[in-house]
Amino acid sequence: MFLDVTRLEKPKLFISSTMDRQTINYRKDMIEQLKNEGYEIIDFQSNDFPYGNTTDQTIINETIEAVAKANVFILIVDSNYGTIIDNKSVIHREYQRAKDLNKSVFVFIHKDVWSDFINKKISNNSLI
Image 1: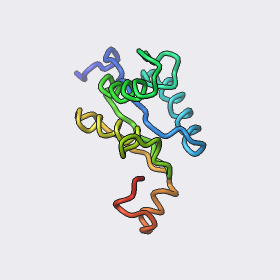
Image 2: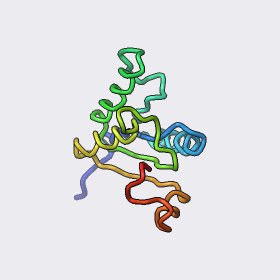
Image 3: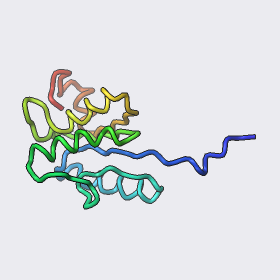
Image 4: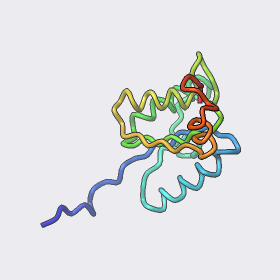
C-alpha cells in the first residue's frame, strides 16, 4: 500500500527577491501559481504579513525572521543585489537565514545574469 499524502500539509514557502522591474512580475506570477496549487506563501508584500512595527529596521528584521516559519526558501536572483544594510542586502540576509536554519533552498537565476556569470562578465566575488 502506498502512503496517502492527500492529508499532509503543503509546505510553507518563503519567496525572496528584489522588488525591481526585472523581478516583480516573475515574483507575482510565481506566487499566484503556487497559491493556486494550494501552497501557503510567506510574502512580506501581502496584507496578511504580520508586521509588529512600522520602522524600516524592524520590518527588515521581521522579514528575515519570517524565514524560520517557512519549510522552503525560494530565491529569485537578477542583476540587482537589493537594499544594502551593514554591507549585505536584505535578500542576502534572508538567504543566509535559510541556510543557517537548514531550510530547503531553491534558487532561480535570471538567464541574463547566469549567462554573464558563465561568460565571466560577473566574478565569483560580485555582490550579485
